[in-house]
Length: 527
Ligand code: HEM
Image (cartoon, rainbow, N blue to C red; front, side, top):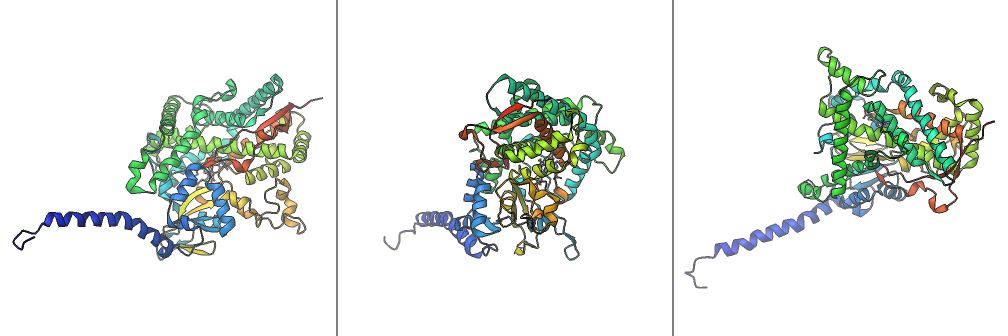
């Protein structure tokens, strides 16, 4: 090139921009990984290198449904606090309940309680109509949550439960009738998981929307109930895409259409049922009653701020699963443990059949203090907890000491109930179904093998301001259904080893995706 030629500015600039872009595309993730592994404030917390470097292994576990089992293995290897993603730790140590979920002392310096709020990745509203606004489960702001909880709480008091008992009893009696018919009609074994789902959804349908799903009446799934777990899976997919905000919209398009359709169907059903329920009054108090009262009186009563229609839709969208899947899973798991342990099943049968001469005597007040029944159900909840991991909370901005370890502000913490409940360091013979561990003597008798069990690690309904609002109802269903079934039937494990349910092999998508529990059912011979 001679010296008079003009410099080819464009030709020189283009490669340099491309190189910079290329550098950014390649270097950014590499630098980010290096930062995550070596310089991140959580870099001192133990965990597998890949999990410390990137969110990808965590999300893969979530989407495959194996997060609970995968995290349990990590805890067995790395201890009770494990770094499971660049800014998330998983904790499986009993002190976590107090350190994270109980309200902290008021901090004068920062003028607020050191609260661990729900992690927005999991809980912020999403685009579906029923998830557009926060509900009692998803509200992050404590004041907002307190308002929503206050409106709905009257539906779940012991007094309200007393008024609801007679219709819950009606469904449990119908369950007994249907199981008897099925047992007499065929020699075949019965999948009791379906019957538990029928019962808990029918009870909540009536309690929530004023109309049953009629699963028990028709002895089959209501089409929506059959697909409802799909809406839970849809949430897991949506959440997974949020870990990469820049790619969020693109990743949303990768959600399988079948999963999207299930979420849409869920929304349509909720809106339809909510609007139908709003058009009539029911005589007994149900979940809707306090909402209607608040809408009617809200404006004249400053203490109650009524929920909007969007908030009511969102509330029922969450409640229908929170109220039904959880209890059905516990019943399925407990029955599975009972048929695997016939001697325990016989002790329970002796207690229930010895206490009640006729099944009409079986009621909530009589069951509340029945010792062995309560021990059996607690043990069922320990081994087969329907919420095996509590979704992430975040440390307050100033950071906090959790289970003896300082975690910087904004760290996500997920709590592994499943791992804690099965840890041999916390429980004698941890993997075995032993209701005796809950006997009062085990607490005081130093010679009892269960004396040192970490009962404080067992919190199936959570503690603190976000503890389960429906736990009275849950207990009432667990007592009534278990007691009436055991009073009426002898249950035996499936003869076919292939059909026997291994609890540990089930997947979890926030809630456990429960598999069939096939059992032989024999109506009890009454004199
Ligand atoms: C065995 C059955 C059940 C178990 C083990 C269970 C467990 C739980 C757990 C662990 C939470 C806390 C979730 C979190 O914040 O991450 C929760 C919240 C909740 N549960 Fe349950 N639950 C059961 C049954 C029910 C039933 C029958 C209802 C009735 C409607 C219900 C209603 C709720 C509500 C409304 C919340 C949100 C509370 C709040 O954030 O203020 N649950 N439950």
